[in-house]
Structures are given as structure tokens and as C-alpha cells.
Amino acid sequence: MKRLLLTITAASLFLASCQDAPKADSAEASEAQEVSNVEGTEYTANTDQTVVEWIGTKPVGTHHGTVKVQNGTLIVSGDQLTGGSFVMDIKSLSSDDQNDEYNAKLTGHLLSEDFFKAEEFPTGKFEITGVTAGVEQTEDLVMKDATHMVTGNLTLKDVTKSITFPAKVVMGEGNIIADANFNIDRTQFGMVYGNDESLGDKFIRPTVNLQVHLVAEHQM
Image (cartoon, rainbow, N blue to C red; front, side, top):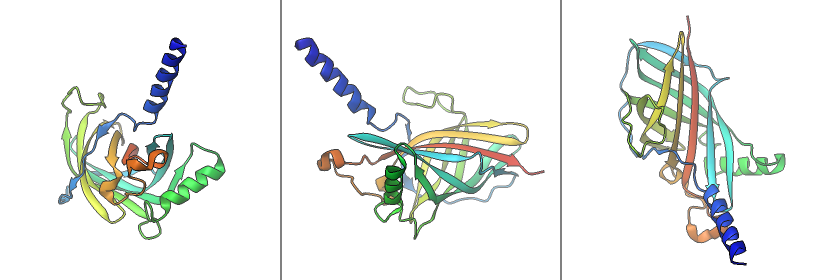
């Protein structure tokens, strides 16, 4: 019986840990910064290959989905990434980890006034304000293969905040592939629904994981 109880306890702890927000670097939000005009070669986002994935969690489950990128550019001066921006199509947000009926219900809720208020704010935007080549390999760094630290203004709903996160940027012949994996606090962008631990199983964690895969190409 003692062994059975230990097994059940271990399994419970494992299941509970699975519902935590994904382990990723934290992009703490601060006051928006001024966006400077930078000159250089423009690379245009390939919107068919570019995507933003999201993961949200609560004590009893995890949900995953995507958001399409509407348009975007990266700017390169010499061999250095110096600027850029991209616009997310919030109305394209979808969830994909349940059956069609429940995916549709969750998507509808996320687009409602409780979260993104998509009818009023149909797009989100990220504008680069600074890029630093090289990443200090500290114990806290999760994305160990990151090549750059990127700072920019993230706008969701009617809130704009500056965030900084590590990214892996690979410059090829005529294209750039940039990947990032970081966590944000949705409440800092005015999305506070369900953010009360006293709700128990209905509590929705404020931490949201974002995984960005951006492919940009130089238009000859």
C-alpha cells in the first residue's frame, strides 16, 4: 500500500508539472521605447512560412495554437540585423489541441472581449528597437543556441510594452531565418480574465509561451 501511495503521489506530481507554463526565457515587459529609423537592406517576411505559436496553461490542462503573420520586414546593415517589424493577424488565431467543437469554442473565447477583443483590435505588432549580437551564456538562459538579444515594442490590444528576448538568427543567401521562444505575462497587456488562483481548476495562468518562426527573403 505504501508503494502504491508513493507511485500515485509521484504520478500526480508529474501530471501537475506538465501543466506548468513551458520552460522558456522570460520577456519582462517595460515601458515602450522610441523606434528609430534604420537604413539597410530589407528582407520581406514569407507569410506562408512564418508563424507564431502560443501555449497557455491552467492547473488541469494545456492549450496550443497559432497566429498568422500578416506582413513584416527585417532590416540588415552590412552583415548585422538592425531593425524590422511584423504584424500579426489576431483574427487568424486558432487552437489545435482538441476536437473541432472545442477548438472552435476556445478560439471564440480568446478572440472575445475577455482576451484579445479582436473585433476592435484585429492586429498585433512587434517593432524592433535594438539588436545585440552575441548572448551571454548564463545558467538562467534557456535558449542556449541563441545568437542575438532582441528588444522591441510588442503591441497587443491597445497596450504597447517593450520586451527583450534571446533569438537565433541565421542569415543565408538571400534569406533570414529567426527563431525565438519566450514567455510573456498576458496581464501586462490588459488580459486579466481568469487570473485568480482562488478559481482553482478554472484558474488560467498569466504566463503565455510564444514561439516565433520568422522567414524573411530579400526581394531582388
